[in-house]
Amino acid sequence: MKPMSGIKMEIVNKYDSMTSVERGIADFFIRNEKIMDFSSKNISKILYTSEATLSRFAKKCGYKGYREFVFGYEKEVTEELQEHNISILTRKVRNTYSRLLDNSFQILDEEQIRRVAGLMSSCSKTIVAGMGSSGYAAREFQLRFMRLGMEIQAVTDAQMIPMTVALCSETSLVIAISLSGCTREILDAVRLAKTKSAKIVMITANLNTEVAGLCDELIAVAATRNLDDGTAISPQFPILVLIDIFYTYYSENDAQRKLSNYHETLQALRGESLRDDELYRR
Image 1 (spheres, rainbow, N blue to C red):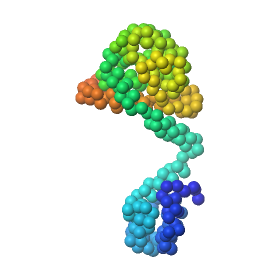
Image 2 (image 1 turned 90 degrees about the vertical axis):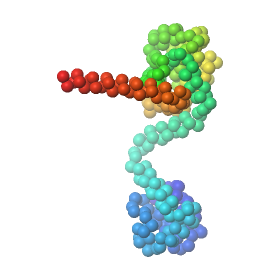
Image 3 (image 1 turned 180 degrees about the horizontal axis):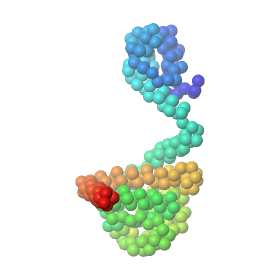
């Protein structure tokens, strides 16, 4: 038998207070490890008991009735079977992603997100700088937000980053991405942006980065050890989660206009696709 949890453990905890008939029902649900027809009609036939007894059993386990009990029970058994079919290596990757996702929302400062969304709306131009895996996230940042009408540019090249930031002004926003908080090109970009009076937001897993004091907003993202090496899972994952959150908050400001911009870019893409189809047919 696999270790018990959830509903099966609830049944075990109530076992001593059950009648002999209810214990027979309990034994069935505790030992069962397969999906079947769990309707009260079918289970009452299998266990030679009444549907009313099944209802009393479910209530003794803490549920309003048998239907509520069996809904949760079937879901739990299904998850157990799925878990059993997942290899240890796949489970390890899934668990890592799950922890990162949970941690991302635990450390999320929604008031800070609102402030950054406000900066995105008020600044005339946004530059997103990142190197390596953070560069991939920077490009995703650009693709997502330009479709809402934002004047945004992703820079991921060691030479392009300082040249682009050098053209910033007090109406510009620089979003610097570095999980380690130690990427030299990104740190230099933050320092340069400061001399241009640009607004600066840094996304990092290292809140002790040496340029922390220069940033208007320092946003923490979840990370595991050696995440920026990209040897286990995609290191940009927690950044992409943050981008999705930014996108939701930003799109809420002047939502009608941004939705219109989104549909215009979508229509342009469809038009391009239609032209490609026409050329292919020729």
